[in-house]
Length: 165
Image (tube, rainbow, N blue to C red; front, side, top):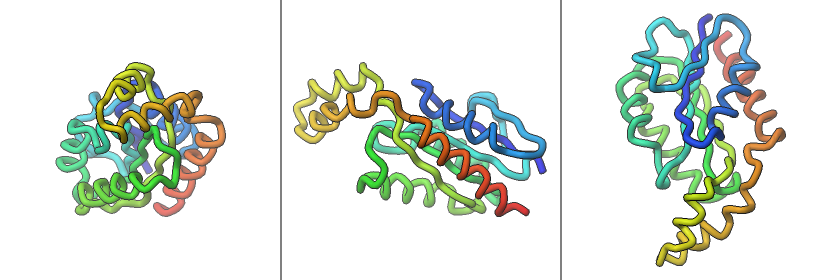
């Protein structure tokens, strides 16, 4: 079985999760930024990761998912700045499920990542009180994803790969 781990990462959060997943996989495997992947041909399973940006799937990743996952075995992982269990996460996972409706989705993993300082600064200057509040929680994201979250990502990789056997 040949497995691909591909990802978009701007600040390194999603890359850390991708590397944790990759390290746990058995068999033939590759890890590549999504910009280096033309399609999923030749892979039996693909883990596809991205940061939630502007409260949604980044457009480049959405296009990749729409164009390349039909009939494929995939698992999706995403990083975001909100704590796990936040209500917003449900809409993001719903958006993922809609986008990959024609794929064989074997799982979705999400975890908190560190919010970039420039984003915190921008949010703190926002007039929208909800955006300002989001910016105020930024410092609490420092150091994420931590080892506990990466351990969960590794377990996710094992669980998804077990579904393929």
